[in-house]
Length: 378
Image (cartoon, rainbow, N blue to C red; front, side, top):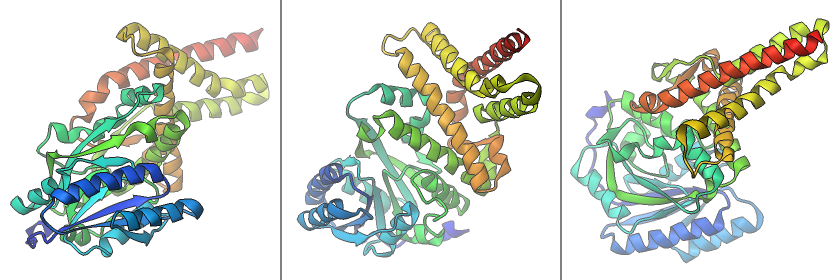
């Protein structure tokens, strides 16, 4: 196993930051890293891997000059971009930070010391979300997706961690082949790398003192997050293909209901008319309404409006359809009836939400079919 590898003593930290626009957020990060570097008694470098165009590219080149960072023309593929940074790095501890984060002044010291005093292949730092709580953000919180960003708060070690604040020993990273370019957009590439490190016998420990503050700005608008959830769902399909041992049976899903209703509609269409093509759409709308009513009734949370409950189900639906899209894209049929288990506590966290959604979907299906049956019989 590769875990028998003996790591060389840390000789510094290479900070790899993939970016594409987000100039203001990136500058905030570089300012915070400047403060952290002033307290860090060892060598450090910043590599900005950017694939912006036009004025944003020029602005980021200027930021690199102003904050003693190296500007590198990066790939549009997020995995290739991060691998570029590692391959060009000088030091054997690689710290990945996202451009929409702010580094705590002690972050470099904490990551560095973790690798000095333990034989870990990686160190997952703490991630604290900061900023305005929009209705979309509150909806995202209710989906459970953000739990992946908080696992390090209760665990000593993890199988993987988000690249917003995580460091790796360069030797271990290269030994497993770095990030897989098949994950071309953000989402899933960090999970895949962690699973492969774990299979090779390497460990990733947690350090809650290595803190980064993640801006909520990039999770604040509905369509911004909707696209993100579609992307995450598609990445899940590739994860299922590569790591079937981390997946489990998941039926029924929203996409399965819709596909079955659509097939039923098309088969029924020649006899019953065009109205039946609306079956899947009506079912989705009924599910959203029932989910919202049930959520408001059960939770009685004054901070949760009907919009928050509705957006929550729509975002989960996007995640589900993204998985269906990924199943087609990556030719992985198991993604149509399985899902990835990202961490051990996931099932207990998800259980109440899964039960509620299943009840809502079945009730909506019954009402939908009953209404259509009455309508076509008139």
